[in-house]
View 1 (spheres, rainbow, N blue to C red):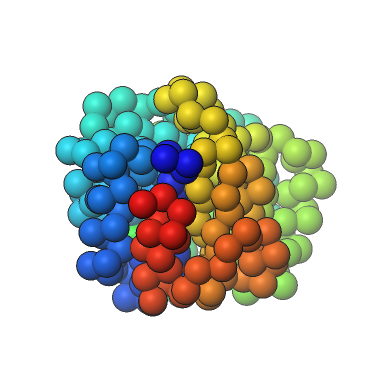
View 2 (view 1 turned 120 degrees about the vertical axis):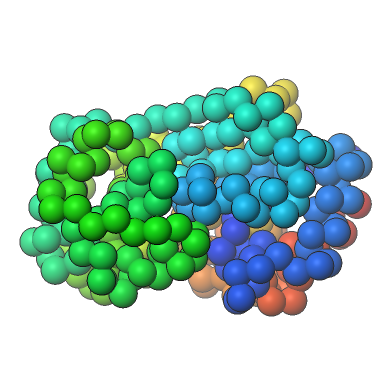
Length: 269
């Protein structure tokens, strides 16, 4: 098997526009797993937003891995072992929340149950909750609430131009102590330094003894570019961002047309 590990982004890649796994995608992934391929769900989503998808693919039975928060947390689905959990230092919480307020956008983070934020009614906060099917808890001081259970990731949400200003501010103020990048035009991710999908996959593949040349990575968003550059084979969905497609070795059909299954059938099975 030339590609013995398959890293799959979720939203816009594995999941269709209804946020569902198609029958063909599910059957093809399970067939690849039973043939020996390691399935890795690599997403910016929090753990609760990935667990249901892992369960639908029966990864707790056939084996597989969750790479959540763009890799800030890595879990072995079969053993439940937490291979990595890297949090953002509380020293930076105030700066992150302040940058959001300054530019009229909203910061959120996650506890063990769902989202915590100081603006539960913001449209993109509601979208993040809907995408992951998790609750929202309103707090008064987000930086103080976050410190009670140090998070792996902050998400700043809002209009793209305002988020770009917040990104510039954070890069200038925190001087590379955190990673600040877009996963969607309206989602600005803030993770610990060195945490993104490629470095996280590198850690995991070293753990399980697979060379990166045997990794196929499928994605559609800006935050998928690092893992696509890293992988032996990079696959972009037809619906991917134009910049993401530039890094693809193969452009598969869209997420609404079983692109993941087509790629696995072509290169793995």
